[in-house]
Every structure is written in structure tokens, then in C-alpha cells.
Image (cartoon, rainbow, N blue to C red; front, side, top):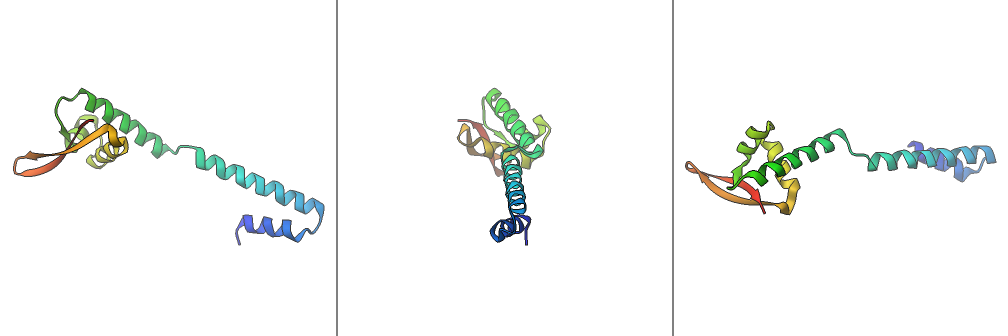
Length: 111
């Protein structure tokens, strides 16, 4: 049984006015806590937004498409973080394929 279920059962049981009022107050406190948690950015979300902004600024300076490895090496992040930042930028970034040596790699540029 969760805390919310317990408080709801107390309200529905209607034992006495004081218990019912306290249970309703605690349910409202749970709702407020959950709403705050839902609307607050986490540390990881803030870091991801900062990485995306850095990648966007870097790509605006480039004249040719660059690979995620180049972005990661220049900005000091992992290649996976560079890819995630490019994906988070959505339609602001174009994704193309370029040939590097004998392999094909994904390259990014400003849309």
C-alpha cells in the first residue's frame, strides 16, 4: 500500500473530521511535491542542454560538415555525448554521410 493509497483510504473511511482533514492536507502536500519534481530540471538535463548549446555554437563556426569525433575532441566530451547533443538540436542540424578513408561516417552541419 502506497502512502497516497493510505491517505485516500483514511479520507474515504471518514473516521473523524480531524483525521480526514489531516489526510487531505498530506495528499495535497504529496501533489505539490510531485509537481515540483516534475517541473524542475535535473543536473543531467542542465548539463545536456549546455552541451547542446556548445555543439550548436561550434557547428555555426564550421564551413563543412564535421563528424561526431571531431566535435567531441574539440569540445572535450565523449562521442556519444556529441551525437546526443546533435540529436537534441533536432532540425537545427543536418545529418549527412561522408567518406573518411574507406569508411562512411555521419557528419553534422547547421541546417
